Length: 272
Image (cartoon, rainbow, N blue to C red; front, side, top):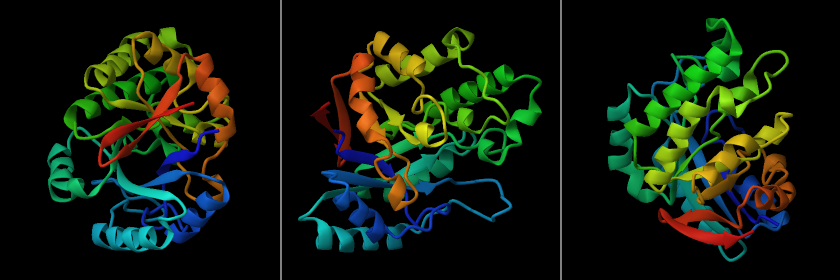
């Protein structure tokens, strides 16, 4: 059983209404040993119909976290971090965030949510391309550049994020169609001692695998990658530790025998 969830959102993230306390109580009820909050901070996020800005009140987040850690810390280990939405033209903003606030956090996820000023969540991104393959290839190319823009992170989030939101019937993923750019991304992570996140929201969105899919995870292992973190990407208490019971067998079948969580940005290894 996986008992650590390292990707969690609350009402400090623009797309969640869940209180931090409700998530902690759910984690205790589900028998988690630890959980790490990773609130969204996406500088320069495009305006949406819901008027979500994905900015973060760092001080309020910090104060609430430490208050609740003091209240519940004898029942569950609590950590906190940020899911940073990186874009290759906002390196300055990313570094300003890290230099000002980065020392506060246990864990930072480098995630690509925006490509060409569009978040695939809203369904318009794929319309800019003639084929899904072109759209997916471009996404990976942008993600690779984003990893090179900002280095002060521990894990890369939901590597095939956009595949959740492909309109209509999802295109079957074939590693060979994207092997060059995916190998470049995975080799970059391995070379720089960055972890690959296994994000179970893929199952929540009806995919056959977590994000990224098993072909990418398997290739990461083949290339020598061993560092993985695990997160539900939960925005509601009921989505915390989503389908974690499937993970030990799934990950062992791909050659993994442990996973990581981070405490003060230092990896802590847990056997599967």
